[in-house]
Image (cartoon, rainbow, N blue to C red):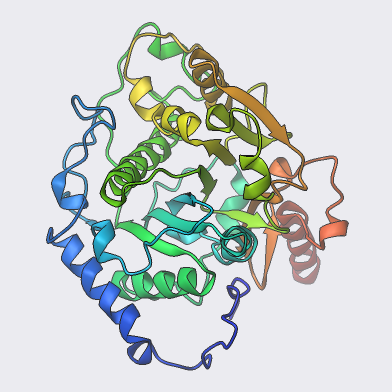
Length: 386
């Protein structure tokens, strides 16, 4: 059965056939903590989510973790054994999207492990939806399938699986929200300026635009949980990084240590220098602390009439938001952010041609384009039928 390549092993990896019931006592303990969290005992999720700087909750974000069909396991930081911080500082990684599209092992191998090896604590915050609305911007995605190694896992099994996979890579799973269906959204306002926001797929009439808002909403909720953890642990994250569910990394992310040596790092956001569509590439972003507090709150800004943020797509909206807050936008070559949108197709991972940086040879990274593979199969099967 096809499955994503496994995550990086420990120095002395456990036997592959070791059942879940025989995992370490500490892993079982964290499962117990997460179970308590999902029922509101010692849980950040049970407290609801308020704005990072006080005030009312953004639209549709009240009572996070208490809604029907939502399994939000975000224990208080003190209840998470691996939440201690390293001497160099701490990096928070956020992954939001669909469970079906998740390609997480390359993120563990090429993001979590390299940053941890530099001496940073790496905290992971995840929000996954079991079933989306079936709408995709790229038609080729319909041919993809879920990683068969996790497809049949229950939420409890998946939680334990991710906790241990993250821990083996040197990180700590701080929050995992699993939902049976997509995030709900309030009614989208009409008129100006709302109709001119993301005009290529305006959320008031486009499911693609509404899905953008759902991603932003989930990110903002996770960011607020991370901010609560900062207060509880008496620290601040040095860097925050977000990536999509289907990010496939083919090389290690740029050195966190090197980025932190940059002047005014707290106000910088780094994104990839391709697939920008006149904005900023929103697939992967690495941010200093102040930049993160701006960009992770994109969802809240959408519901406010000012600034207008007239934009064509999500990329230009985020760029306008960053400029309005005087952030420094910097670009990284593919060698610094070596990730691209991908999916599992039949027996291997392929990348989506639309999002692959055109200045990079796919052959040099031994990757194939999904669209090419699908066309080849269609031609072959058509020939056989003829």
